[in-house]
Length: 115
Ligand SMILES: [Zn+2]
Image 1 (cartoon, rainbow, N blue to C red):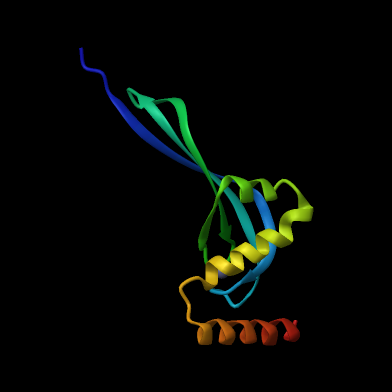
Image 2 (spheres, rainbow, N blue to C red):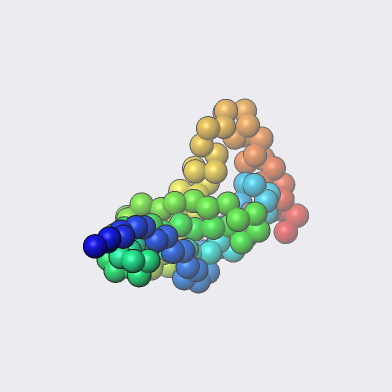
């Protein structure tokens, strides 16, 4: 008898996560909360949820940022959202040089003062 095991990946939108600046769009965006679940499948039928990941995705440019478990919990509590916004900024500016970071932050201030 042939038994087929496999993997099924499923992503679904949970809802809006937070509003904060996107360094790719250069403007304030609503970020969406997405949950991705990997299932063990058995004859293409989903059986065991194997692991799940939480992402926030920019509603403008669709840039996804994966959250670890601790930060995913921030989504449940509005008081923690500013900490999540700081994390998104860090992630979006990761790998940039100090000069680029300063330039992007200055650009942000300019955009925000324009409203
Ligand atoms: Zn964006």
